[in-house]
Image (cartoon, helix red, strand yellow):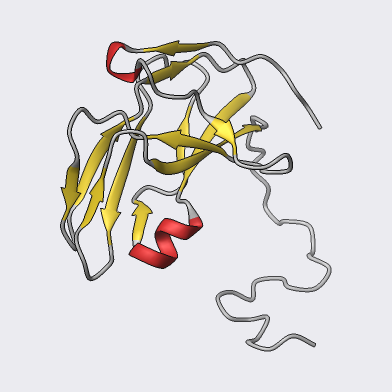
Length: 153
């Protein structure tokens, strides 16, 4: 497992909040906190942009993926709208999270609430090589949506 120090800048409205952290020793995602000044109630069907109060400096070859928290999604219908959102290594602005309430009840976001999770991941850059024919696939070929069936085995 890779481990490195990630530079982070705490913005004025993020002061006093904890830095993103892992919920458990084996968690993949870091919890992102809401850096709102006042509670914000998100009505059913409404979307909004929630600040986290931090900026990061990712090394080249890495991205940060912003994803929903499973408990918020299941219990309240609150999800990250552009999931996963990508933060590129050359972005230095504040991390903000687009949340939408797909639930049936209003949900109030308060300062310090865990609103999303962030996963730091390596990625590869590719160059396309135009071919007249692609190599044969071992099993699936051109079979598309639903082609592997509904039941296992």
